[in-house]
Length: 253
Image (tube, rainbow, N blue to C red):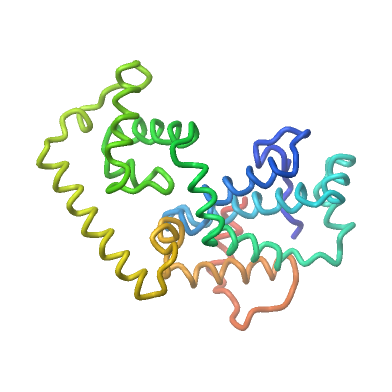
């Protein structure tokens, strides 16, 4: 199979005059937002396909030679054919695993929190879930019910007052007791996760768990094995189940 046939500028929402810094920033945001480890089980295969497109777009645009060939021909396959020594499977693996590194998450979090982008995502999630706060926190990337409750409510209340979004009963009528119970449960869960993270080595595990989880390691390995089968490179020790390959093929059709 050929690598994804895409418009890399469109995939990363970039103009053709985008600078190298803009390309890196757009890729980082897209990779974290659409990383397969963040997707629910029923959407995992589609998320894998989306992430392949994002990583491939970055592979084209981040390299001046590949970008120039694409700009001249409009063909991503031209870049592949002219770069035969490039190991696409290794590149995908690096992007797949590197997207959730501590440095990447920390940098993205500092840029994302309190940004207009976060506000847009919050209000979209508020509308999508009709004001159900627990669902909103599941939807908004890097959100924390314990730390963000007051800040999120202030943003939502201001938007309601400005008639930017409507006031939903689930939000407006949440009782004090229900809210306190929700926050109490969130604090208990957060304390447990922080304890586990400390036992496992500390660091950014609390943020990582919003994007990746240990029980998805086998799914990650299956995906990387499929990439190696598709784009070449050394074989992994274990071959992915045929069912997983078929699911990914169906998702791409």
